[in-house]
Every structure is written in C-alpha cells, then in structure tokens.
Image (cartoon, rainbow, N blue to C red):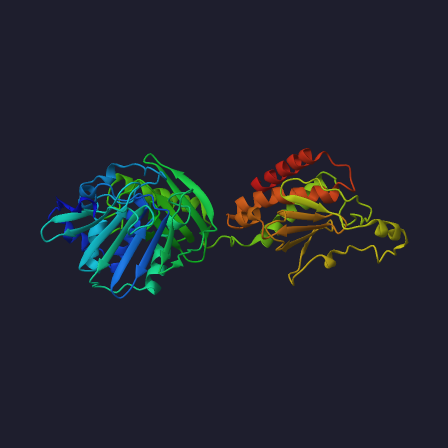
Length: 466
C-alpha cells in the first residue's frame, strides 16, 4: 500500500435510490449495468468470471481516478458527458446507479483499478455511507492492464454462464456489433468464452427527426421481432405496424430509458419516435399480402416480359429467331457487377464449321446447376438463379448460350432480395439490362454500353410506372 495509509470518503445516496435499483427485474439485468459501466469507461474488452463464491467483471477501460465520483450515486455526472474521451462513444449510464445493482447479486463488492500511473483497491460500507481507498505502491500488483475489476461476493442469486451468454446476445448485441459504435465495439467474454451474436443481414436506414437520427436495420419476415435500442442496449421490443412484419432494430441516442430499462420515459421525444418508426416500416417493409421479399423469380419473370416488349418495340431483335453463335470473341467489358463469359476456344472455332445443326444448339445445360427450371424469354434468352459465391459478379452473362445467371451470393442481389417488389424490380431491371447488352451486342448493332443501358432503363421505368 502506498504510504501505508488508506483514505476515506462519504457516499451520498438519495433515499429513493435503493428502491429504484430494486426495480431491476432480474439478476442478469444487474450484470448488464456493469457491462454498461465498462462501455462508458472506453473498455475494448470485458471479461466476466462466474464461480460459486464470486462474480467478477473486469474491463480494459480507463480505470478509476476519482472514487468520490465512482461511489457517488445520482450525481448526474455521466448525463453531462456527450462522448467518451477515447472512443467517442455515447455514454449509457446517467446516475451512477449501476454499481448499486450488486445488492441484487451479493452481500458486498470490492474494486481494483488501474489508470495510466496509479492503482488502488477500494471497498464501500453502505451501512455507514462511506468508502475506503487503498492506493497500491506497485501499480501492476493486481491488474496487468489499465482498467477496473469489480468482484461481488456472498452471492444471493446464482448467475450461470449458460444463461448469461444468451442474455448478452439478446440485450447487448448493439455494443458487440458495430451498432452503438461503428469503429469501436467491445469484446465480451464469459468464463473465457467469447460472446458472438449473429450479425444482421437487413437493410440499413436512417430516419431524421428534429431530436436526432434513428438508425435502423430491418429485413421483412413472417413474424415481427424488432428491438428498440438505447445506444446499443435493448430497451424493449416494438411492433408499430403488425401488417408489415420485420426483424431487426431501431437504435436511438436521444430518448431516455426508464430506470429499469424496460421502456422509454414519456416525453415529446418518445411521442415522436414511435410514429416515425411506424411510418418507416410502412414505407419500406412489404405488407403480409404483398409479394414475398424473396420472390426473385417472379420479379425476373415480370421484367422478362417488359424487356421482350421493349426489344420488340425498338426492333432490336425479331422474336424466336435470335441466332446461335460460337464465334464470339472472349472479351470482357468488366463493368461493375457484370461479367460476359465466352467459353469457346480456338479448337472449337475451327470445329464449329463442321458442326451439324443439332450440335449448334445452346449448351446452357452444361453450365446450369440445380433442379430449378430456368426462365426462357421469347427471344431464347435463358434466366437462372445460382449461388456463385461472393467473389463473383451480381450478373454473369454467357453470349454463346444466351444465358443470364443471377448470383444469389452477391451482396447487391441479397439487398434487392429484401426490398419491396417495386424497389426490387428497379434494381434487378438495371442488372438484367447489363446482361442483355453482352448477349445482344454480338448479333445486332447496338449503341455504346452506357447509351444502351440508359435507353433500356428509361424504357423499363416508363413501363413500370404505366
């Protein structure tokens, strides 16, 4: 102990505070508060250790330099901080109530902490409303890193690893995934096991309000499960538009949760929040009676008929007589999201002169995989859906086979797959226009790539609107 002397301080607690803390519905909610404290301390790592004798939460954060602020309760010092010093996170705590949640977990709590230049041990006596701090002479005597270690002993409620990990995944995924802090999420371990919540695969969106932005990530689904997050921490589930079910979250910085974090307090801000998220869902999530968001085949079928009419109106190709060729040059325009494939060789080109009419038929069956029947347009163009891998383009066009494959693994196609039908058709139409160009350019005199796409997309949008 440095100077062989501890120092003492008084704990000032409002008379209603203990009653407020008792509103936490379960012991796991108390552990949540300590994780949030580590987040506010700019921790990039939090380790939780559970034994039959103690529960320990250790963070790799900034450490405690002022124990009067640490042990102080309801002093509102956190509510005045807009961003944390290191990672610029929005603080989650407001009144310093979190530390008192140990009353639900055990009989007493002690603290080890280390800052950049000091280390100390501290324990509080809430019966006497005071605390003691024992500065350590050797700063690395207990902690080998900067941060804080809180140990709760005399456990009243048994918290197990098997129930804590799912709880964190359900309620604190916004701190682990890049939601509350895009560049500086936190790693959380429970008895050495890293907590890895499943990432969201929905569509990101921003709702602007007078009070601030609402960040969301939603995907249409058969049943609704949408979380309302306060700075990455789940407060409650919401379902403002039951006729438009979705999964995902809305994350907000400017609402105020209730003390038990089970809802938002009644305010002008909350009266703005709920109508705004309902409006967003109605505009961006299909209703139950609308097309399935995964019905790509129906979208392509509808687009195929529109393209057939456009090609006919512009007399680009007569119906049913699009020729088969094996003389296309193996060129690749390398446009974004599109690759033209030519699988002929010099040997095949010399042999093709002797091929019979039967042998000159398209060989798309050698390329297609799976049991699904592809779509065929009036011009003989084949459309199919394959999982080609993320590294392959969104559309792959084979000139010789007159084949357009839509890559289900491509992020662009995945995003289109989650949209409402009209939005999906617009995006798919632009991709299919690219595939058409690579097939048709060998047989007819088309404009340049960009001019062709502009003309086709304009005609397609006109048909969609009409």
